[in-house]
Length: 337
Ligand SMILES: NC(=O)c1ccc[n+]([C@@H]2O[C@H](COP(=O)([O-])OP(=O)(O)OC[C@H]3O[C@@H](n4cnc5c(N)ncnc54)[C@H](O)[C@@H]3O)[C@@H](O)[C@H]2O)c1
View 1 (tube, rainbow, N blue to C red):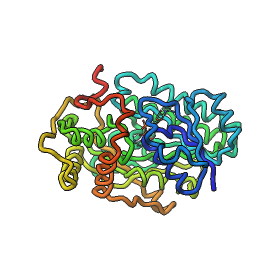
View 2 (cartoon, protein in one colour):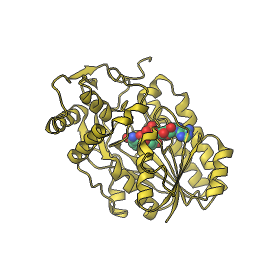
View 3 (cartoon, protein in one colour):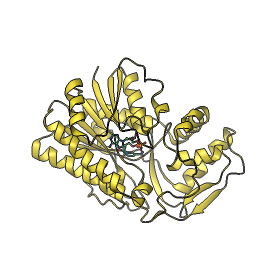
């Protein structure tokens, strides 16, 4: 049994990871500042588990975080605390710099005093920027972040690399593609489309829907992260991808077709094209051969199965929406600029 500290464990991936680690027999300390994207519904099944503890805390609060780490002595910190929505970062990037860069700096400084604690930092494929057709970014591809969110994630990755190089810090960086599955805030593409299908509303799509993303079911991402803790080498970077690449328009058509099969779809929901995100990257695509070959990790969930599970989850967990403040998903957030 290992002891993990997960930051951002009330959010989408964090809460799935917390539950996965608890169900795999580990102890988890969850540290989250509780923001708009946190949802207590996400941890309802494990909140009373004797192996689970929660602290409301901003990772920028170095002294308090350091106290928790010294008291609980986790084997590893999975860092998922972040501002995550590109459109919000276009409106205002202050909080993105605070959490995604200064927050990481706090964490790194604490780790210099706690050398036995490993850091596994969860980053994104967006740091590589838009990737040309027929090409994929591997771990050696140069970073080219193109929006404020991606730039702050890239900055954090660079800072971590510098601590690994300078102080021999016990840390690993992971760059994952787009996640989908239960518990994601409906301001993001897939849950937004599902929410609008269930509410018989139109399905807004940026630009002409030509942007391509690579998709991973969140449970597969959680398994990869535990594998990296168990088998990954310190100081390394691992891409976590699936090669399940789809243009947004094709993905939405897929969701509609599965929703029809499951009797969730009414003809009232039509795809509508709305003004594109400024500077919208056309294509993300990862080469994940390193984790496939060196750590023997491969994703298990195929896209149709994952989307069907996701639709069922949102249908059967209506109370999830009670915690969501903004329920109007007609237009792009971040329209101010
Ligand atoms: N969702 C994806 O497709 C995806 C893909 C690759 C990487 N990632 C990365 O995975 C991580 C988690 O993403 P998510 O989609 O679950 O995000 P999310 O927005 O659903 O959850 C983020 C959580 O972090 C918490 N948080 C934010 N700032 C904090 C702070 N300063 N201190 C403590 N807690 C704080 C929030 O309250 C929230 O509960 C992020 O680092 C993100 O960059 C996400």
